[in-house]
Image 1: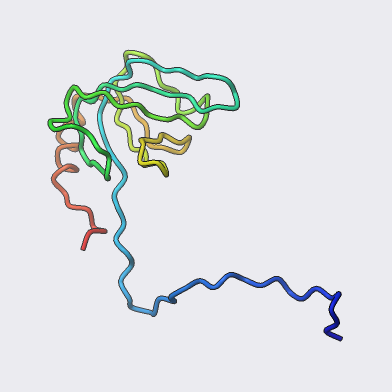
Image 2: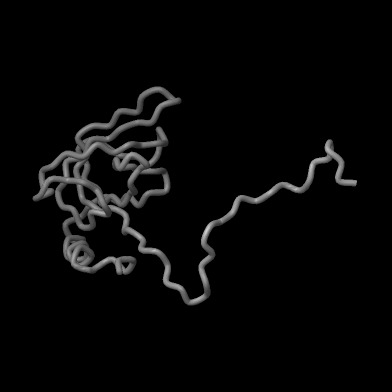
Length: 137
């Protein structure tokens, strides 16, 4: 038993520091939330992600997204990992809540929150931009 050719149970990697009960969670950054008009959408070949260029109408939560101030009128290039979703139409305005990719660029995954923008939503979105992120210390 325990000879050289035997394979033991798989070893799990060391998780590092273990959090204790009652310890606060590490800070979480809110995802970027913005309102914008789609200027162009390129889907590209099936193996590669697509891209959407959006003209920013207003930035409600930056979520670490680097945009010039004021953000209104700035253009933002969003990576679309899925070629078919979310369905964006050129010339339409949307409320977009995506995330930041590993490279810090804007990413709009298939499960992103995307709804057509209506002017009646402006008050609610304004309140969102004033609310601090609960994940910040």
